Image 1 (tube, rainbow, N blue to C red):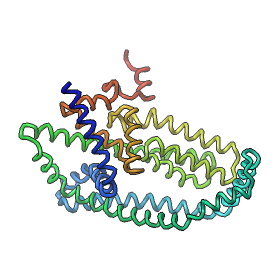
Image 2: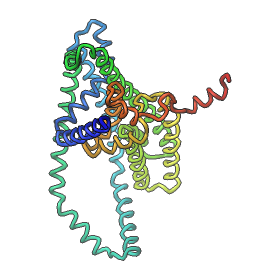
Image 3: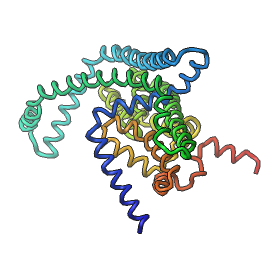
Image 4: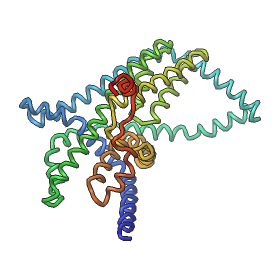
Length: 359
């Protein structure tokens, strides 16, 4: 009975915690995002410090490398966008023709004539001014948060030892070694997951770029980079990127054959990603079962939107490590973990190793 009571208290604590995360989202999102990014650069920062570079300069170098990588991606996308803009008028005319065909289909199938459709659309368009204002404020908020993330990231790298000492001071003397191990493992999970994800995105750029170029998609590099970047958002990102690419192919006036080839490219890349790239590059770093992975992503979107979806997997990986090392929370660590923890995800390479290896 006492154990059941403790479990109820833990669930209530989680519920209040989620409510707090939701209302404190505007403050916490840049803080947590910068903390996770700082964990990614800890190893590089330690390398710079081992070369007798001060911690302040090492943290600044890591931040500049991060900004350079983001700028390089943005430059590549802008170059591709400029070439895409050359064909925008032709794409608009094709989309307008498709829109007219859709209106004719609605008229014939649903019975809503074009005049009624126009009234519905014009009614929706009355709030265009307010939507524009919301969009402008969102862009301003995004810019402010981007600056905050960079500042927080630099400060987290600079004061990481101080923060770790603070965490160790919160626990009893006989628990310091265990807490130090938990902090180290939690940082490693985020570091390995994000570095593996970055490597996988790079490989996806190459595969999508080759596939879309062979298919004959215009501005193939732009759509390859877009599909790779959207992989940051688990499950949803790859479908969104492919859907945008298919819509672009339709707007470019290409036939159904090219759409089929784009979808075939997507399925081939997804097969390679699932059975080769993820086991080799990302691996079982987070060690969460698929049910709670999806639940964490959905909950992250409900609490923090897209940022919550991006941060969901590394954060739940850290939560599992904390649960595994706390006696009262170990049942929850067991629940969100895989059914067979020692059983690694099987890849095509593992299959061939077993096929040709010694029995």
